[in-house]
Image 1 (spheres, rainbow, N blue to C red):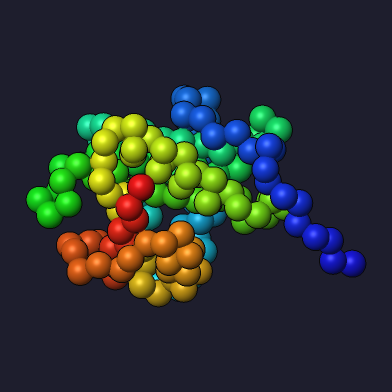
Image 2 (tube, rainbow, N blue to C red):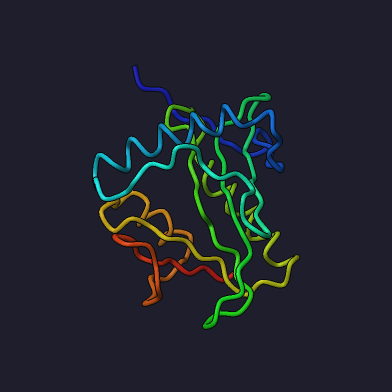
Length: 160
């Protein structure tokens, strides 16, 4: 029997990650990477994702009933072309969670922070061979731009 997915409004809390979140974040990263690498073997696995390892980096988590169900890691960069930019380094959500909209809610939180930090652009490297991620960013209103990105990735640009 199919069941309708439950709405996320009022259920998911977005907050900054803490050291206690690391095991859950690593699990989400590993699960997401397994999916992405199934479409493109050029994407490599980092031994451990870098949480807040960059200057100006932040990690946001989405939490439902005190369980981490998604994350987005960001860092501030002064880009030659775009100026002050929030760069989205990694993002993953629990693919088995019954609530739609986890990724969108995380990006909404990052957008709000970008406005607060007076950043004019959010940017992300999105794998070219991952139509789901490509569609996600385009649905948010991002534009595919000709900009230096990671090999095998398109740079998606979003205005906060």
